[in-house]
Length: 271
Image (tube, rainbow, N blue to C red):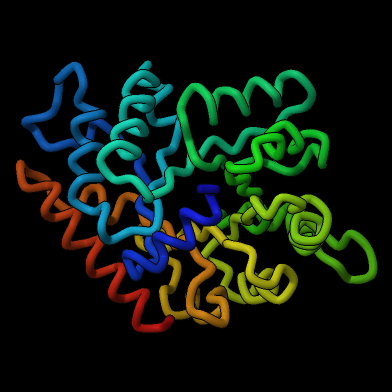
């Protein structure tokens, strides 16, 4: 099953547009996990097991693992998700952007080493920098389009001709020229609902990964109404810190489940 097929099935099976971001920060872990050799894996596995039936996907952020020499725990985490929760796709949030043989190696890293179902990519270097990922037609390729950070406007809102903004050009290129295998999606931040609506207008039913709700302050109602497709799907709405660190003690996974359930239900009010 391809990434897009798995995502569509998870939308349906779990009745959810929620993506839980896995950004493990040991400084925020409950006291009983601190100092343990596999604390990152233990923490993330507990979160996954508590929330897997409430989500459409998981999104581990590679920097949180690599910074602590925990890439082996990332591999084990993704393998655990595939083994224990088959059908829930995993997006490796890496935001890679390079060319030629280097891009090919990043694709091998994401899809063959880590076993991710999809990866986030920076499209700034153009189509040839994306093609090594497109060579895996069963995998998802999720390209940055209109990011949730304030500084995204420095470049993404530039006029590239005829009144077209750079993020609009990216959306158009991906939807009309790069998505030949139906494997592409776009990142559009929840902090810019008007731009979510504009991207949806350009790309039709292409899936959108939407960070920025929860700790970043994006509005759930505005996000869903701007980005949903006609059938009420089409979105992977990410929440990380607000779910991961909802609890501070040994019951952290139960607290995370409750936060995820509340977020899922809040999203579903507007589908």
